[in-house]
Length: 262
Length: 280
Ligand SMILES: Nc1ncnc2c1ncn2[C@@H]1O[C@H](COP(=O)(O)OP(=O)(O)O)[C@@H](O)[C@H]1O
Ligand SMILES: [Mg+2]
Image 1 (cartoon, each protein chain N blue to C red):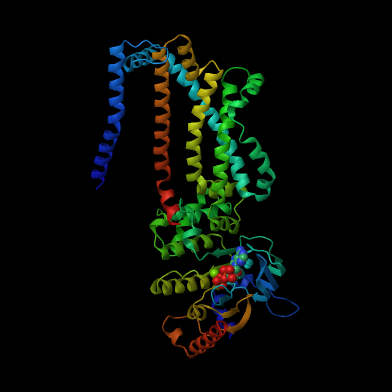
Image 2 (image 1 turned 90 degrees about the horizontal axis):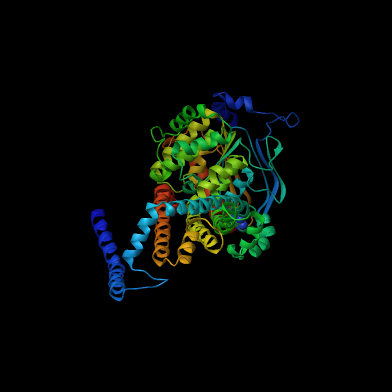
């Protein structure tokens, strides 16, 4: 049974890969045939070579470290703030009503619009980027964890009241575990956002990380290197998502199952 | 006759020590008391002028048609609802919030257990809430699981247990609170007849051993008579007391002989007529 499904998945993946691979080969042939000279395009083989060089001199690894450090730190800070607010708003209708207008007024501000202020306040470097990433990550976590807390089985809340569980234990032992599967979905969403925002800040202004790498390659008219960075960012985003999906399955296989039956 | 029933429980010792006597009236003060309690929910009166005293170590059963307010009355006793008018007291003190001495077994065990914790973990929750040091918990958990007939299931998750086992587990968690009063809301309503009878007898021996006061809600009239020292029938819309019957059947009760006892049959007839009348 599972052997069959595994085979089917493999077949499916193979099928899905046919078209992109064919396109790449066609593009390579075309680029070679026309002796492509461009500031924005490069033959796939040149891109691969540029990527290998960037690895060889560690430049892309250092850039990756800088981007991921900013993205993950911002994600962590934004998640903690978003989770704390989401739980508080989910538990207290009064607080939620008091803060609703404020939240709805701040939330639509594109995080990147904070750049000028953050730059003045914090200057170039990690801190400014982390703050902007954190701002971007707060909202999805806040909104989704608030919804997750509200949809917790009311009986569990009654159990915690009847047991006279102290407030901190109630949050830690009932609310967070009960809402965790849905909070994790929000976290996955925010992880993607964190990477996008970090790279955007670097492309726009911050002279560190993968975004700055792309800009440097562009200014040096190195289309191959620019695309190499682009491909690498894609690989990182893809890998990040896979890691989180696997983690989600590992962590919540059981909780998700029992959540369905309850 | 009531004293006879009590005598058996008293023999276990604890009940006697807990009993308090009202010096004025000369009889025991109730452990749980409703004084003219009215509760409005969503603009509707759900319970109206309910007055009721439950003596320490008494086993009180509440019956009534579906939707007549049994669960609501139990929630009032648990302190999960506050009355709109009137007063609910425990040992003479007003109930403003739930108390550790009152445990409640919910009808829907599937929703009342933590699906991400094992059986041991679910029992542990009550011990953690009571501040028991981690080192003392495993022994107590094992003891409680044994008490409710779940030895060897400590590592199972609720989803891996049958309905009867899940309800036993919920009872174990309630016992972990070391309650003076145990509230049970149709605890066996969703179980098959055999499991049900087994659990009825287990609850009776548990209660006899611990001297705990019980308020037991059921829509099964036979179950109410079989278990109770007293049965109260509620009238619907709004919920209020329609009938009150002392059950003078000898203890320990027995699934065969008790149910064939003439007194059992008489009470059954009386309750049956009452419920039939409320449904018209
Ligand atoms: N939170 C609530 N808001 C409004 N009405 C409620 C609420 N809870 C229960 N009721 C109503 O109160 C009545 C009694 O409910 P309940 O105590 O659950 O009955 P029972 O347990 O006897 O079946 C029902 O008519 C029900 O619809
Ligand atoms: Mg009910």
